Length: 360
Image (cartoon, rainbow, N blue to C red; front, side, top):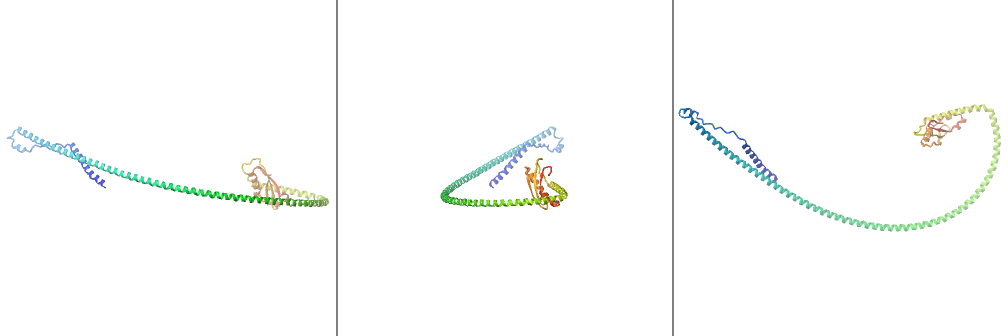
């Protein structure tokens, strides 16, 4: 606040002094026109004295009047110049004093600023020293704490290692005892197993001998039974052959007609199955032209699918899987029941060969 007041106190005189100085300089440059000394108003007097004054007298008086006017003008100009010089000197003095005051103010301000900076630097230095001392103490305390913790950790590790060693020795002793006991148990079990095997071998030998005797008796009985059945079978075969020959002779034409009808129906059924499977078959991409898979199909009495299995693989698992899925998708095949009863059983199991071009 004091610095602000001082700046205001010196600033106004400085401005006024500069302004006055400029005014004086401008006045010294600009010259006003000189006044013309008017001759004294003596026309009336001269008119009355025409008869008494000569022309020479009149001219002399006029010249004197002009001289006096010029003297007065010279005096006025000298006074004006003196006044101008005094004002210029006063203005210059004011400017000098103002400049000196401004320099003093700046020197005072610089001195105060230098003192302020020196005080701030000293305070900063002391604060830095205090911070450094505090940091040194903190680091010393931290180092002491680290040393204490390191010693505590070393002690803890030492105790842990001692405990671990004690535990290891105890476990080693326990393991030694366990192995000794296990070895004794193994020895006992080995002896018991040897005894059991000896008894088992003896029992097996008795059993083998008993079974061999039983087998010998069974084979003898079986041979006798086989002989009896062979004789009965031969007799029954002869009787059946004679009866079959008679039936064949009597129904040859009927069987021929039924056989043709059954064959046609069976072929129609197989063709229907192939068409249904072809419509349901989605061939995977990138299958070679020579791929071929045989799928074995087994149906139930009503044409339901019991199983579709790969009888011969194509070597391409995707191709084989698509063939099986095609059969599963096309089932059931209810048309099986439309076949003659005599051939239905024969067409409940059949094979389908899958090739990229067709199904056979």
